[in-house]
Amino acid sequence: MTPRPSRRAALGQLAAGSLAACSGAGGSREALRFWAMGREGEVAQALMPAFERANPGVRVEVQQLPWSAAHAKLLTAFAGGDLPDVCQIGNTWLAEFVALGALERLDGRVATSAVVAPGEDFPGIWATNIVSGRLYGIPWYVDTRLLFYRRDLLARAGWDAAPRTWAQWLSAMEAVKALVGAGGYAALLPLNEYEPLLTLALQQDDPLLRDGGGRGNFRGPGFRRALAFYEEIFRRDLAPPVSETQIGNLYDEFARGYFSFYVTGPWNLGEFRRRLPPARQAIWMTAPMPGPAGPGAGIAGGASLVVVRTSRRKDAAWRLIEYLSRPEVQGRFYALTGDLPPRRDAWNDAPLAGDIKAAAFLDQLGRAKPAPAVPEWERIATEMQSVAEQMVLGRLGLDAAVLEMDRRADRLLEKRRWMLARGAGAAP
Image (cartoon, rainbow, N blue to C red; front, side, top):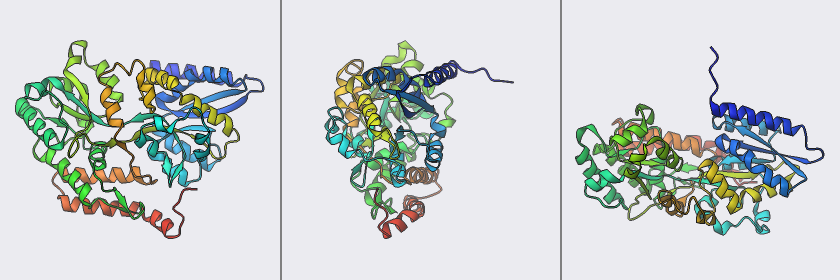
């Protein structure tokens, strides 16, 4: 039985068909290939007519890749010499493709650009594009994690404002737990998501990797402190030891008070507004992540735009990146996707300027910190969370957990240590 395509899928097929039809026209215009992922790839096509009018000699061919297949597609295209001219790339993938020698350095172009302004971007986000002191990407949209919370239940528990420190957060969670009783919890920290624990870890001064990124540093005092705090939330029965897949409908459970604090990202601004009824919109709010002694750091996430090193159209590729970096274009991109702009001056206009629930993201992004810039990081983070889950479930103690995290990280970093020992660890 053939499944009926969704409306979005049908629209995507229509757009792809229109794009294919357009690609056959264009005369002598220069064809610039641009790969973008998911919803961003779908929306990017709508931004191209204005760029093409300003650059009449260029025709942009946008190819949309599903996120689930994007990483493998990029690696396959690199191996086959078939990468596009411009590409969207996840911030945690950048170091891997720099190590492959796939990306063009952009330091010189930024130095002479009248559009790309490093001082306007959030510093932590900009830093995700720097590998071994060299710039390889320009932020396209940003992502970080912070608190979504039930302001009504928090008020009933005696708190008139969101907690700002770890100690306050524990006290607030205890108060909420006492209010909701045995049938509910204070927080949801899904055991299959590494981002909450990584957020707590980035609030420490200690680096997550040591020896030039060649070994794990999970047994260091900073990460131990973060992991101990994470464990305490579960030990006090303030969060259920479950994965997100074990929650039937996250938004319904939040609305009924099964949990009141949720560490999540900007896409949920739109989801909470769509999935909670109008009468329930006043019950929730956002707040910066509590830190050890005040509002703490968060993950510098999102995606960037890169120029492929083998492109024969690098000047046109750079002009496209400059166009997508303009504050007014980033504002339109946000209106179409909900993706937050990396330039702070793009936050001065509607609809972001008047959105009180987005304001916490502006605050949090000012303290965002990049994860370690090594190609193996995503795999290390997954192993980190796997071990943390074993600890939460009582199968490992804190001391054993940090040792096991270091052991797994060191195994994944073995090739990197070999390269560093031979002076081959620097970016090209």
